[in-house]
Image (cartoon, rainbow, N blue to C red; front, side, top):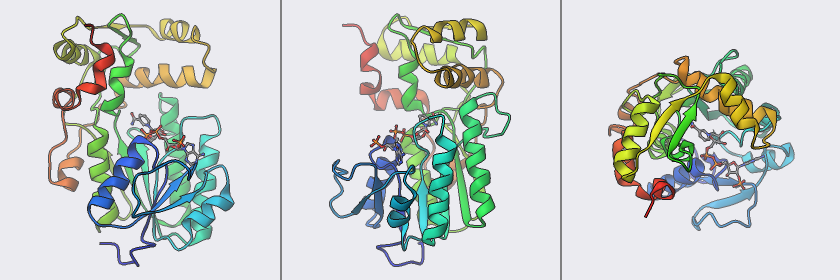
Length: 293
Ligand SMILES: NC(=O)c1ccc[n+]([C@@H]2O[C@H](COP(=O)([O-])OP(=O)(O)OC[C@H]3O[C@@H](n4cnc5c(N)ncnc54)[C@H](OP(=O)(O)O)[C@@H]3O)[C@@H](O)[C@H]2O)c1
């Protein structure tokens, strides 16, 4: 356990989000107190036993207040945005100024300055900035969240994208949250970068097969070229950086950037990570929008 007073040991950002909420609920179940950082403290975190503070990565003063007296900051990246790295730098600066001792950062597999997947570069810059502070750190480089895969299937039952026959080792947010809690409450993780993956190397053909079985519909994967993917996505009117993030995420899969299976979930949590088939059995609501009645 972290050797700090229980009311100031931990702070978690983004607790209204899917990952932060999971981590906060697990800590509450373990009887561990934590300070919950929310963009809007008016929103109900449904964890009455925990202290809630309102702060934004965009507002350093609010982050300094939120992190005052905190030993370990579980830092979750904010939504993808053109100024995302700047927001992260501000949050890290605030942590240093507030006297935080350790940052556990939820990063992304294959984080590198020259990653094909443009958003993975944000994570590398954030990691490097955290390293440069001299604070104690642990990086949890999550693979693609299984939970988001149902949303890449089109209404017509076709998954399109420039992923070729590339493989990735999708991981359930539940498993990432379990691994994070183990790091937050445990010892021996100082300076370690963990790849946090599911158990299997999936292609999108295999994903389509598993979704066909789960939904009872014929779901298929049609690989696109990079040019076709840009053409298709630019039709939705999203900003260029967002279209580039989407297209390069799948181009990164094609290039093997997310083809990383690790034993981290098992080692940190004592249970094996969920495979996609098991995830779909456990969470039928995750793909309900794909089922035709
Ligand atoms: N590995 C993957 O496949 C994968 C997939 C999706 C996302 N991600 C990354 O992982 C992060 C966390 O995932 P998630 O699923 O928990 O995301 P999520 O559910 O979208 O949660 C994002 C959280 O960030 C908060 N937030 C937004 N702007 C902020 C700011 N300026 N300062 C402080 N908090 C801010 C949001 O607050 P509000 O609710 O008030 O807006 C929300 O709580 C995402 O932001 C994304 O970078 C990874």
